[in-house]
Image (cartoon, rainbow, N blue to C red):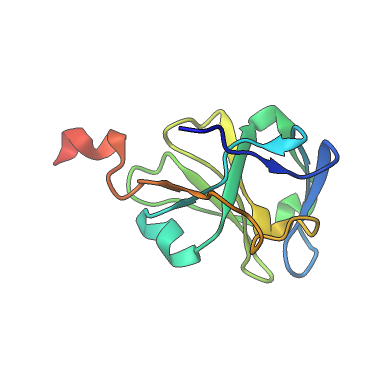
Length: 133
């Protein structure tokens, strides 16, 4: 499989929710190496295009008190939303809680409609659920 990258420019990107109550800084390389959509029950409904960084490369700089946490099923993954406008901003996936997935649509400099080669993450058939069937 070819390495998928999307050029984004500067290393530090700013993520904001729709109403501006939540603001985060994301330290990413010049290229997004993983751009994805997921087909798990929550991601299918929210429809966001995401990327992922290590937790230390994602920092909430405004509105942490406005974030709401949503968990379901195994209660390992943490999904965060703005309590005012409802926008999904980021999450910590259960397969690797040391990472932060984030909504590319919350970064003004990224045109999610221009992104190419978006991977589909098969969260519907999540590897941590295989032993439960």
